[in-house]
Structure formats: structure tokens, C-alpha cells
Image (tube, rainbow, N blue to C red):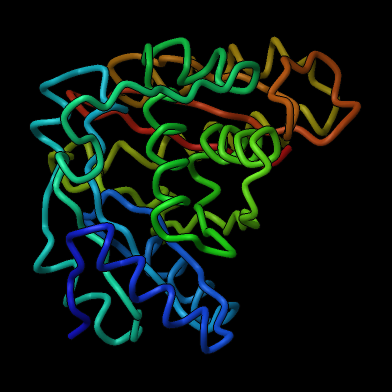
Amino acid sequence: MTGIVRHVADLRAAVAGWRRAGDSVGVVPTMGALHQGHLSLVAAARAACDRVIVTIFVNPRQFDNPEDLAKYPRTEETDAALLAPLAVDAIFAPAPAEVYPQGFATTVSVAGVSAGLCGAHRPGHFDGVATVVAKLFGMTQADQAFFGEKDWQQVQVVRRLVADLNIPVTINACPTLREPDGLALSSRNARLSAQDRAIAPALHAAMQDAARAIRAGTPVAAALVGAEAAVLAAGFARVEYLDLRSAEGLEPVILLDRPARLLAAAWLGDVRLIDNIAV
């Protein structure tokens, strides 16, 4: 089983050795509680890079709700076992004090693409994401990084961060993996009750119906209203947002005249589910 690295100095020493050998380095940033979606990112990194680092760090700075942070699953031993067959070269699982040592006083904030959607409902979330991702890129010194498309807004924030700060990392966005019934794989799915798990696929189904309607010429506003009503009728407690945005800049789209994504966040009990699809 691949060893777990806890300290930045040890990780950098390993990376320096790989660099001397001429190896390329890929990183898959995660918060643990790994599932097949994460493992597909690792497989993509394994195919593209000589060396692969998987980071496991539940980043406290991207949680706006302390209860959500406390409930987030931490399954390091199981995660390491899942990664073993993929022959990753390092699992970097630092303690919070290693990432944010005493006196830490820097926040990275990405404007524009972080506004609205999850950014509007989770104050400070994307500042926390941008800060930890910038740190992980500096710690791992990776050539390529691999993220899932399920967190579409996050991917756009990371791409903007890398472009604006001239960080020499290629960002790869990999397709969302789904259960057979359409539910996007997520670590949070484990918290769904059996009843809510049966309801959960209705979010993706309603989004698909809305996307088909929009492509067929239904006005965007009407399609979105219909989709939200379908999600609530299925048993979701509330829809946080369900919106059509441009694929890259995430500006609101009224007419389908450019590549667009339909993005949604909705609550089932105390579990917040997100999803997005191309339109």
C-alpha cells in the first residue's frame, strides 16, 4: 500500500527526486471519502503522468457551516485501500496545522466566476477553495491537476486562478460519473437516508428534461421554472438554485447562443446535492 505523506518537506523531497529523473507529476486534489468518481480522476492522471499524487485534506476554510465540516466523512484508511490498486506514488494527507500553520494570514480570492450559484449561497467557500488549491499546487509542484466536472463552478474558479497567477499547472476536467439511475457520485450521497436516496435521481432527470426543452426552443425561464417544480414535487426540501450559465464565464444565459451549462443545487433532508449538465 502506498505510504501516506504528512509533511510538505517530505513531499517536496520526493517530488525533487522525480524531477531529477525527468518524470512528469500529476495531482488529484480530494477531501477523501473516495468513490469511483475520484478513482476515475486518478486513472486519468495515471494515464497522463509519470507520477501521481492524491491529496486528502478536508479543508476547513471552504466550509461556511461548522456542522457540515464536522459531519464530512473522514475515511483515510479505506481511501488508502481504494488507491492501492491504482499504484499512486504518494498520498498527501497533511494535518490542518501543516496547511495553515500558526500565523497564516493569506486568502486567495477569485472574482467573477465565483459569484452566484454556490458562491452566493456559501459565503467564503470559493476563497477557501482557491486558497487551498493554490497551496496544494505549490506543495506538490505538479504539472497537471485533475478535477471532476460535477463541481463545474469550482473548475472554472481553479482555471481562472491558474491563468491569473501564472501557475504552471494544466487543469484537466474529467466527466462526472453517475449511478445507473443518474445520480452524480458524491461523498455526500452516503449521508442520504434510503428514502432520500430513492428521490435523489429526480434532480438529474429534471435537469435533463429542462435541457431537452431549451434545445427544442422552450424559453429558458419557463424551462427552469418547470424543472424546479419537478424537483420539489419529487420530494426535495428546497432548490437552492437551478440556472443556465455560459460554460466558461458562468454569465447568465437567456438565449442559447453559446456553450452553456445547466447547474443546480438542492437539499434532501440535511444533504445538499449539486449537479450540472451541458445544454
